[in-house]
Amino acid sequence: MKYIVVTGGVMSGLGKGITTASIGRLLKNRGYEVTAVKIDPYLNIDAGTMNPAQHGEVFVLSDGGEVDLDLGNYERFLNISLKSIHNITTGKVYRNVIEKERRGDFLGATVQIIPHITDEIRHCIRRAAAEEVNGNRKAEICMVEVGGTVGDIESMPFLEAVRQMHGELAPEDMILVHVTLVPMDTMGDFKTKPTQHSVKALRELGLQPDIIVARSREVITPQTKNKISAFTDVPVKAVVSAKDVPDIYQIPVELEKEGLADVVCNYLALDNREPDPAWYRLVSQEYTSRATIAIVSKYGIEDVYISIKESLKHAGRALSTEVNIRWLDAETFDLRDLADVDGILIPGGFGQRGIEGKIRAIQYARENRIPYLGLCLGFQLSVIEYARHVLGITDATSEEMGAGTHVIAILPEQEGVA
Image 1 (cartoon, rainbow, N blue to C red):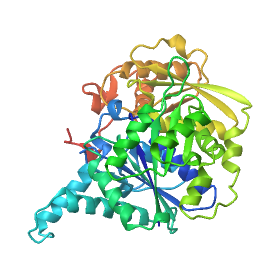
Image 2 (spheres, rainbow, N blue to C red; image 1 turned 180 degrees about the vertical axis):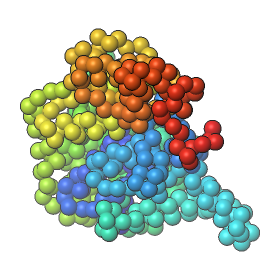
Image 3 (tube, one colour; image 1 turned 180 degrees about the horizontal axis):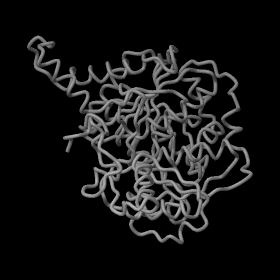
């Protein structure tokens, strides 16, 4: 098994997850079996109890695991089905170690971060890497994304575990990719100081990056690459520019142009096979038509509904149709906002806020014969809307929402659950 560990510096939200998925895609295009692990340093056991407005979408895996949205990107980019063990959190790690301590597995030893927590982290990574992907096939390469930013207290045990793994494995079996920010000043000059400090912090933890992926608005210049290389001891060819693009599925194309796959294959002693061009053809194909889809939601943050957004995008690509999503706030939108749309979608949600606005949108779709898709709560509300405005049950509602004529019932297994 070969490992590619992806870390991030300077700030969060740089796109470590997309970078991880894109590198995996480059290798997948070359015929390698790739799996992925996401490390989240928060103390939660999983993302299931986290507010999506703060953390983004909770992605649900095939085994019911509720995890970070990056695992959704892994599945979409790599065409694999992941399980709960592919999401490692501080909460899971500490729970496992404490349970072992309570059972007496450590034979009375003092349980400490090193070696007990770091041993558990390494065990979790190796166990996830060994899990079969797409049936009974074993992965050859495991992508490991370490969430958070280098320097965070929460990430330290995980980075120490990575350092230990690096020492155990052969040089060609693990590489470290560091994603960092290269901002531009008002004069249009690229500034490398944040990257220098970020790599310095990484090296203080005993980790030297093999590859630097430099995030920026534009392609960084050769001079900037040379400067980063000089200050970080990373070869110039391994300083890779990752500029902003309008579509995340173009990122593997841009990284291919940068020669990242050549560098990765060289470091990992992999045969740099001729890539399958199907992905690049799909991403670069011209759209022949366009459609506008309104999503009426109450959270107002696109990351909450990222799987829905990507599903619409995928469907559009399959039909050579560019999908323009119009995000509408369920509490404030005007019906005129729906006048020129080709479809209306209402996603799932919880609580009563925004319910009446969503019902107005559903009624508008029905009366004006606009294609409508209701997901979870969105589907339940379509039943309520029909009961109110067609069947004349004016107080029709869901048992979840309180008093009224209940046309949607709580499931038996949900009864008594607060």
